[in-house]
Length: 189
Image (cartoon, rainbow, N blue to C red):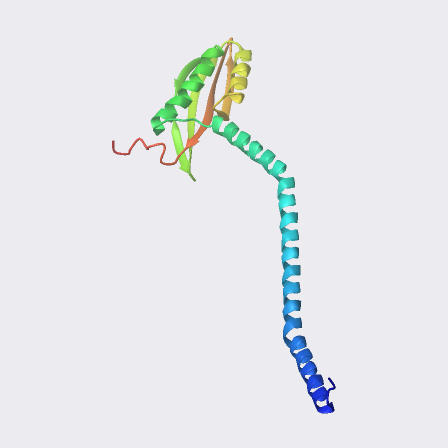
C-alpha cells in the first residue's frame, strides 16, 4: 500500500506531536523520579555515616557515664544523711567525738552546731575544745578528719601548749542535702 503525500504529512505531523508530548510530559517525570532516587540514596548514605559515628562514639559515652556515676557515688559518700536537721547535726558531732576518742584526744566542750542552708545544701558547723598530752595525737586526729567518710572539713584550728598539756579548739563542717528530704527542726510534726 502506497501512502499519498497528504497521508504521509499527517503521519509526520502525528509523529512530531507525539514526540513533543513525550518530551514535555514523560521526560520531566523520568527526571523527577531520578532526582528523588538520588536524594533518597544521599539520605541513606548520611544515615549510615551518622550511625557509624554513633557506634564509634558509644564506647566513649559509656566510659564518660561510668566516670560520672563513680564521681557521683564518691560525692554522695562525702555528705551526711539523716531524716531531720538535728539528726544530721548529731551525726556530725558523733563522728567528731569518735575521731577524738580514737586518737586519745580529751574533749573539753562542744558548742551547739550552727547551720546554714543555701541552694538545696545544708552546711553544719561544729566547734569542739580539746586537750591532749601528746602533740602526735593532734596530728593523728587531723589525719582522721582528712580521711573521714562522710567528709568533715576543718575550717578553724588552734593549739596552745602549757607545760605538758596541749589545749586547742577545732571547727569542722559537714554537708547534707537541704531539700525536702531533711525536715527542719521547727517544722510541725
